[in-house]
Amino acid sequence: MEPVSALIAAAVGIVLGAGVGVFAGRRMEARQAELTRGTAQAEARGILEAAEREAGTLKRSAELAGKEEGFRLRDEQLRDVEDRRSELEKLEKRVAEREESLEKKLDAMDQRQERVATREEAAMAREKELESARREVEKGHAELAGKLEQLAGMSAADARARLIERIEEEAKADAAQSVREIRERSRREAEREAKKIIAMSIQRMAVDHSSEITVSVVPLPSDDMKGRIIGREGRNIRSFEHATGVDVVVDDTPEAVILSSFDPVRREIARIAMERLVSDGRIHPGRIEEVVEKASEDVRAEMHEAAEQVLYELGIHGLHPQLVEVLGNLRFRTSYGQNQLAHAREVALLAANMASELGLDVEMTKRMGLLHDIGKGLTHTQEGSHVEIGYELCKRHQEPDAVLNAIVAHHGEEPARYAETFLVTAADAISGARPGARRESFEHYVKRLEKLEEIAQSYAGVSKVYAIQAGREIRILVMPEKITDEEMATLSEETARRIEEELQYPGQIKVVVVRETRAVNFAR
Image 1 (tube, rainbow, N blue to C red):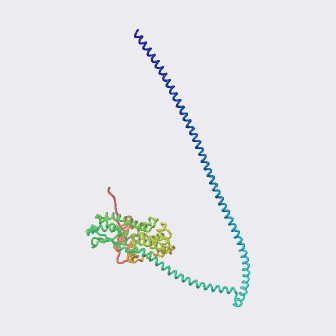
Image 2 (tube, rainbow, N blue to C red):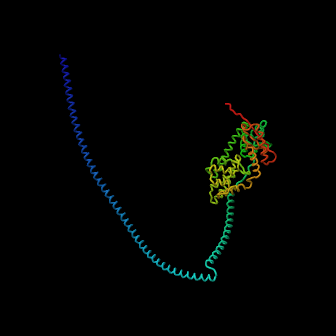
Image 3 (cartoon, helix red, strand yellow):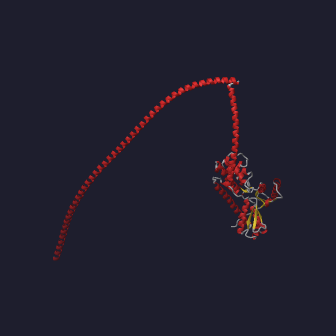
C-alpha cells in the first residue's frame, strides 16, 4: 500500500504543481498584457499629441502661405492695372497726336483749295483773253491768206498740197540716203564682227588634223610569224581575209604585215584580231573566227565609249541610246579623209563658241552641231544621202525641230529657220576647210568601193560583201539556203555587168561568189 500511496501522492503533487504553474502563468500573462496596454496607451497619447502639434504647425504654415499668395496675386493685379493704365495713356497720346496731324492736314487742304480756286479764276480770265486774241489772229490770218491767194494766183489748199509734196520728196531722198548709209555701215560692222567671232572661235579650237589612211601595219615578233599567218597552202590568210573582209599583205617589210581596206571599221577589227593572234600564237581557221568575233565586239564597245566620251565633253544629255550607237559609228568613219566623230565634235564646239558670243542658245547649238552629220554613221548600211538618213533617224527619236533643221539645212537643201542653223553651217565649213583636214582623191576612192559593195549587196540571198585588193576584187558571200550552185554563176555575171554599166574604174574587177555550207555540232 505504501508504494501506491506514494504514487498517488506524487500524482496529486504533480497535478497541484501543474495547476499552480498554470495559474501563475496566467497571472503573469495578465500582468504583462496590462503593462503592454498601458505602454500602448501612452504611445498612442504621445502620437496624438504629436499629430495635433504637427497639424497646428501645418495649419499655421498654410495660413501664412495663403496670405503670401494673396499678397502676391494682389501685387500682380496691381502691376497689370498699372501697365494697362500706362498703355491707355500712350494710346490716348497717339490718338491726340493723330487728331492734331489730321487737323493740320485739313487746314493745309483748305488753303490749297483756296489757292486752286484762285488759280482757276485766273486761268478762266486768261483763257478768255487768249480766246479773244485767237479770234483776232484768225481774222488777220484769213485776211492775209486772201491777199496771198490773190498775189499767188492759187488757193491755200493747192499751196498746202504742193508744200506737202515737196516736203515728202525731200524726206524720201533724205531717208533713202540715210538707209543706204545705215545699211553700208551695218554691213561693214556685221562683216567685221563676224570675222572677229569666227577668228576667235577658230583660235579657241585650233587642233592638229591627221587624215585617215587605208592601211594598218601590225608588227610581228619575227619574220617566222609570217609563215604561220599564211598557214599551210594559205588556209590561215584566206580564212582571215574571209572573216574580216580586208587584204592581208605579206611582203618584204621586216617583222610586219600590212592590213588594207577602205572600211576603217573592218581594218580596225582586223588589226586587233591580228595582234591578238600573233600574241597568242595559236593561228588556225577556227581560232581566227573566234578572235575576229571578239575583236568585232571590242570595236563596237570602243565606238560606244568614244560616243559617250564626246557627249560628256560637250555636256549633252538625254540622247536616245540608238543615236548614241550611230554616233559611235562615226569613230571609224571618214569624209575626204577627215574623221567624222572628231568633225562632229569640232563643229559643235565651234558653233557653240559663236553662239555664246551672239547671245544664242549654246546648249541647243552644241546638240545641232554634234548631230548634223549623224546620218553618215548609217550610209554604209542604208540607202539615201546622209542628210535623209540623219533626218529620219532624229525625227524618229523625237529630237527638237532645231536639230532637224540643222541636218537638212547645213548643205542648203532646205532654208534655215533658226539663227543657230547658220552657225552650224558656218562651223561645218570651217572644220572641213582646215588645211590638211580632207583629201578629195581618197574620198572618191572610198565612194567607188562603197558603190561597188552596194551593187553586190542589192541582190537577194547575199549575206556579206567585201571589196578587197584596192577595189580590184569583190567577194560576195551568199546564203546557201537561198542561192544554189547554179544561181551563183548568174549572180556573178549580173554583178559584173552592173559594175561595168554603173561604175568607172581603171583596169578590171574580179567578182568572186562564195557559197559555203557548214554542219556544226558539239561532242559533249
